[in-house]
Amino acid sequence: MSRFLKVAAVALGLAAAQFVAAQPTSAPKSAIPITGLGRAATAAEVKAWDIDVRPDFAGLPVGSGSVAKGQEVWDAKCASCHGTFGESNEVFAPIVGGTTAEDIAVGRVKGLSQGGTRTTLAKLPTLSTLWDYINRAMPWTAPKTLSTEEVYAVTAYILHLGEIVPADFVLSDRNIREVQKRMPNRDGMTDRHGLWRADGAPDVRAVACMSNCNTGAAKRSSELPGYARNSHGNLADQIRPVGAVEGVDTTRPVGSAPGKAQAPAGPPSAAPQPQTAASASAVAAPPSGAALAKAHNCLLCHGMTSKLVGPAFNEIAAKYKERADAQSYLAGKILSGGSGVWGAVPMPAQPQLDPAHAKALAAWLAAGAK
Image (cartoon, rainbow, N blue to C red; front, top):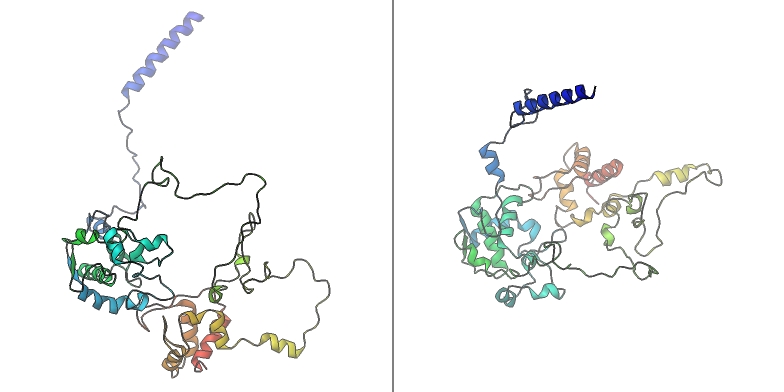
């Protein structure tokens, strides 16, 4: 019996060796075609997205643009958000400022380490980043619509506002490397830290407390400005139900007692009192349009009689006073947003707004915003 098993084992081994030798060197492709997963991008489609410009300016297209041309484009397409001189407004961060002639000479913005103004030109080490961002993302209402000349020109105008190039300068793919040598913070970026190199030292310092920690040493306070405190609802109601509770009740004024603004759980201790006609009327009375505009932070972008980011309320009221469906039209615009009616800056949608409040605001505007 033992002899038979040995013969059978040898036979099986030979058969297995022949099977392995007969297999192809690579796995055969599936005989079933894969469908429904799209198609390969064409060369033209890839080229349309392959527009990045590296720090060494690889990928930079041939072209040029003057400071004068840049000012024309800036005034038409950029100043509404970023200000006439790059100072921006309450919505967007400033682009220009915080740099000196000494910074341009040295290549490191001194003010950044001394609490100075943190603007785009103050922080930016590579000019290619500025060119690339304008090219792919600006203007924010219609990205990738600027021509190559306009991108060069707007970049040149920003550099002129920062006193990096003169007023008669023409920026091009031929001289942009020389301009890079005048960027105020060109030496402000380093890779000598733990986030970049495995052997690098951490760029932050902290002392970890493992026992007997003084948890009362750190004091937290909200940094939300008063006008934006409750823009998106009560933050205390939006935190996750497990883990550390860090949410602040944004329906309360700064410095008031913390906690969620909600009714206590469980049945009330006493039966509710019947509501009188007078109390029902008081509860049902909606806030005035002006009060709603203030409560929902509309005044951040709209003045009562002066244009800010968007048109003034009295301008909106005058524009639609003769329109029969003004109330429903304006309510729709408030909730859904829109663009192109009052210029390039769009009206963002307000899905968090109570539809009843949107209708009340629209009625107030249609009645003259008074």
